[in-house]
Length: 393
Image (cartoon, rainbow, N blue to C red):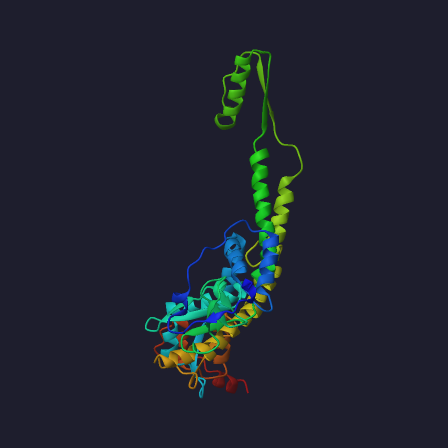
């Protein structure tokens, strides 16, 4: 019976998922367009989808410097936002419960989960409830559509995660998601090929062609000239027989810089647009106004969408787990929320408060705490506008 038609077997849920997975070789061979297309076909197979070829390709291509910058910036746009845990009934911030999440484990939790944006459906497993240690279930072993984690990427045995793991696993993204990398792998492959071709071109034509003309015809002198020419590429000095002249001819062919650099820049632009919604967030822009537009696309649109994803996961999945393990945070009484308000500079904030002071009484303690000003009391105004008005009546 063929491998695709064999019956797969579910294993018992008596061990951790990550611990049960068998470590296997990852394909790090040369990335090619054909491999990418075949990997997409395997991942989208309607009967027996497997992700390991596509995820191995992701691991191979993720070392691209531009991709690293854009993907890290996309995650940081969400993880750097302020958040709080609030009471469901009153809407007031619970400072104690908020501080429970302002820990390293929670930021690691968000960073790992937000990789679903670029790499697809992500499952995190709680392996230590005391320290809240969350581990990534290898995506190459995960089949989201069938809710399976295969112990071997090409094997038959799997762990059924559709039920029974409510208290120790969290899911980010939709089961069929393959991530942004599924669309930009072609560009990353072409970019790597362009860089390799440029390196080969530089190796061949980066150094000028050095030739020699001599009036010596005997084999000994010709061999000596040839040896000195070979050494000249490294030492830049040579002792040649009398009657020998050197000719240094730099490369005068087409503009290779424009050929390769333009291709790499175009591919970088495509990567930037796919991940952060623009090209001027990390690269030099033609104008400040355009770069600000691209920055707003990231902060006000993409980061807002990512923060909503985190809010849904934390409120619907993480809080029930924290409640189960006795952390005192429950989805029945608490909810998690990012601060979606616009960020103001300290001067902008002060100007607003200063204007409001002309019409309203504002708590002195709040003003002192917000602007870090030691306020000891209210200063009396010696200039009485009421008396002045009476004098001019």
